[in-house]
Length: 443
Image (cartoon, rainbow, N blue to C red; front, top):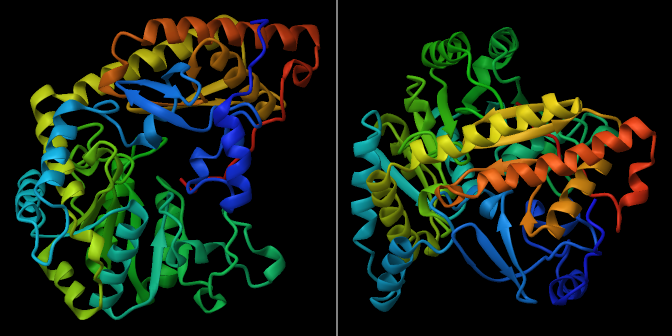
């Protein structure tokens, strides 16, 4: 166990101020310090490069956790992407006329995805998902949506957390409160379980006549069952329901493009965000003409969907991914991490489970008091110079850092195994409160 205490610095002090100025302290739940190490997490950064982040006190950390919540596959501050954006800034990011990069990026995306015909843009994954659902509803004239997985914060999705009785609100996805979502949207979004063909078929039979779209993530914690994908595709085609594949998290990690290409799943619409612009705000909605044309039947329009920086970043990122073969490199890093985790579990005897596909891995702690052990792990890794959690978003920038990361992780989990054997109270070794649990996922 590392003996030195974590020193409070400018970053944590600034976060205390932020909570008096910004509801919740941050704009993104996944970046809230309480999700990692309450009262001790270095909440703000000064600069970043590769997989290293420097906080406001000049302390440098290796990010072996979220890597910009999955948005930096090539690493922070990639020179090729940054230079493309700098050039776009110098030539003007937003004018009365449109940026020609809209066409270049559209052609790139359609070349990668030959099943698709048309492209629309947004700047965040959540709003891109909302656009796709709007398009599906406009084209079919129907209101209901079936979904599995996590798809953002907009009303269409969060309405699934409304209950017939207000006291039951939030029952479906604990941690995501639907306050402010109109109750008129009750029962317009119907969840089903990923890879559960029987559950899907039962619900599509029950609600299919009123269904505008079925929304799924291509892959997340588990490999897809081919029979599940086949049933989803067959039923949506037969019933005239728009099949929307959310690639915001999985896209461009396993291949240059959507993971659905690897699984021979042909959607009607696919959504991209996060990694395909390497940290710059950009999102895309691509789809078949017969469905995408419905975008013109509804008002879907926003000024900053036309700005140049996101377009330039996405173009440069895709070119760089193709040049350096980022998917194979990211998968190799992830496989090394997963193999190391499994060896640590075998060695320590801890009750843990390795989840996810290599590019996005997660450790499920199945001991009693999992949040206490998670907090202790984050605390001790921070002392050793790592920004860590029980998830690992692999990137090209992690090459060469995994071996040391696994060594430190193993040492800390051996300490946790010692706590369990001795019967010691693990919370007594924490220097602050226990981390928050966040929200559940529907997979």
